[in-house]
Image (cartoon, rainbow, N blue to C red):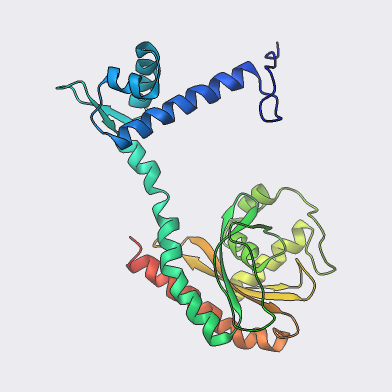
Length: 270
C-alpha cells in the first residue's frame, strides 16, 4: 500500500513516511549542532535546546551513539560529538585544501598564458567547477563557480573519466547516446572509450569545441597521495586563439601546472 500524501509544502508533495524521515534527520542534525555549539550537554539540556521531549531526544541520541556520531560520558552522563562526526567532517578538508593549494598555481598559469584557468571535480555524471583564475585577454572565458557541465564533452570531464575503469565509466555515464551539443560532441560509448584511451596515452584532454562552438580547452589531471585523479585543471580560450597548433605548445604548460598542484597535495595537503 502506498503511503498517503500529506499537504503540499514549498510546491512539492511529500508522503507521511518521507516527512517523518526528514523530520528525524533534521532533529538528529539539530542535536549534533547543539553539541558542536556547547559540548558536554546532558540529555535534558539537549532536549531543551532542540525543543524535543526527553524520550524523543534519547531515541535520537541512541541512534547517533550507535553510529558513533555522539559519545556519552559514562562518568557524568554528558554527551559529546563522536569520532564519526569528525571523520565525516574531515572529508570536506581535502576539497577545501585543494582549492587553497591550486589557486596560486592557477593564477600563475593564467598570468603567464593570458587565458582563463579552471579547476573542476566530479559529482556523479557532471563536472563541477570549484575555482577559477581569469585570464587578462579582452575576450576571455568565464565559468560560474559551482556550475555543472557534462563529462562526455568537456576537457575537465574527460580527464575525470579517463583513469576510471571501463566498467566504472559505463556505470557513471550510462549506455548513451548522450546529449549532442555541437558537431564535435562524442555521444556514443565506443567513441568515448577510444577518446579516453588516447587521453591516458598523451596525459591530457582537449575539448575541441565539443560543448560550445568557438571554445577550446586543454585539461590535465590532479592526483592525490594515492595517485588517484581527484580533480582536473583546464585552460580555456576562444578557438581562434587556442588553435590546434597552440594546443600542442600549451599542453605541456597545463600538465606542468597540474603536476605542481598534485605535488602540493602529496607533500602539503595532508
